[in-house]
Length: 521
Image (cartoon, rainbow, N blue to C red; front, side, top):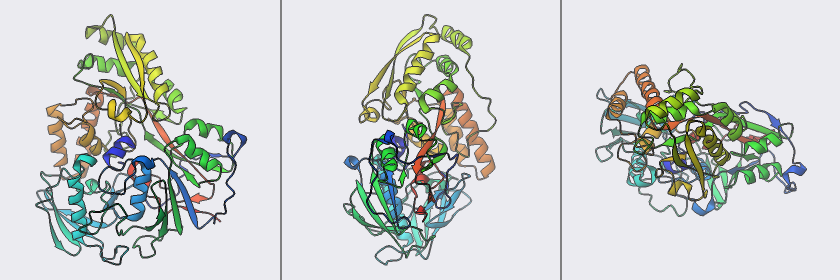
C-alpha cells in the first residue's frame, strides 16, 4: 500500500517531481464538454475564469486532518498543507532535490553533521520572520509523531541538533547519511516554534492563506507576501472527494476546474471531447502483487520467481488500467532516479514457471487466497485476471475482496498474498516503510541482512554517482529475490478545463503543490 495509502499513511505523499512550474498535459489527449453520459447538469454558478481555481482532490472529510506533521490521510490534506505552509525542500523533475524554504544543506566530512540554511526573506502570515528555530522545532515535532508518519525523521538525532543562527541550524544524523536533502523533501512543513494546537490553521509561510471552509471544501486566498513566484490565481478552492468517478463527474458538470485521479473508463468515454483536457502523468501508480517471504509457499524463492514468470503483463495492463500505462519489470519504484536502467524486460514463460513449481515441491499445485479490493480502479479486475493466469502453473488462487474502507487496516501488511498500492513514492521512503527489518509494515518480511548492510553502505557514500549505482543494484536484487511482482504501471489521469495551466507535472508528493495553477481568460 502506498500513496495514497502509503503516502496517505507515509505522510505525504509520499511521494516526486516538478513543482511550481509547468503545465502538464503530459501525454495529453483532450476530451469533451459535459454530455448526456455524465448524467449531471452543468453548474451555472457564476465563476471568474481567471480569479478562482476549484480543485476536486482525493480525500475524505471523515478522516481529514489539520496537523501537517502526522498522518496525511488524503491528497486533499496534502494540498491544504502545501498551500498554507512551506516545506524545506522539494523533489525535482530529474530526481534532484530542489530548494524551497531551505536554500542549502552542507555536510561535514563524516556526513553526520549538516548545516541547513533557510531563506532570510520568508515570513509567517502574522508577520513574524521564519527562523531556523521554527524549522528545527517542526522537524522535532515530526519526530514526536513518528508513529503516525512512519518515522520520517528516524535518520536524524534531533536532540543533538541545534540552532546556529536566525537562518542556520545544524542537523545531526545518527549514521553517515548522504541523502539529507531528499529526507527533507517529505512533508517538512514549517510552523512557528511552540505551535501545538492545530484545530485551526496556525500561521504559515506558504503561497496561500486559509480563508474559510472546512476539510470538505476549503478556500485559500493568495499570500501576496510570499517570497516565491506570485501565484497567478487569487483564490483556490480545495474539495475533498473520495470517489474517483464523482471527481470526474464534478469536472464534467462544471462544478470544478481540475479533478485529480479519475478513472480510466471515464477518460475513455471523453477522449474525443474538446471541452476537457487530460493531464496525464506517466507511471504514477502500481498495484504490486505482494508475497510474504516468511509464509508458504512464498518462503521458497523459486515460487516467487514462478509467479513473476507467469504474469501476462500486457494483458493485465489492458484489463486493469485500460492501456493507460506501461508494463512493469518488477521494480518497485521505476520512476525513481536511482532505479537501475537497462535491465531486460521480464516476459512470460509458463513452462519455466511450472518447472520451478515442481522443483519447489508443488508439482500438484497449491490452494491460496488472493486478497484485493475495489479501493482503487482496476484492483479487483487485476486480481481476478492474476488468479486465472496463475492457475496455469497450479496456483489455485481464490480471490477475496475486502471493503475499501478496511482493506489497508485488515489486509495490508498482514495477509501473505494480496494486491498492494504504490504511487509516486521514492525508493528510500519505500525502504523505510515497507522493507524495514522487524517492522510491522514490512509487508513481504524482507529481512536479508546483506541487502540491508549494502543499503547502509550506499547511504554513507558521498559520491552521488556511485551512491546511485549502489542503490540501483539493491533495487535490481530486490526485483529478483524479493516478495513483489510489479506487473504494470498506470498513468495518473486528471481532467481539467482546457484553459487550465500550471498543473504540477510530478507524481507523488509534488503533485500536491498546485499554487501555480490558473485558468485562462
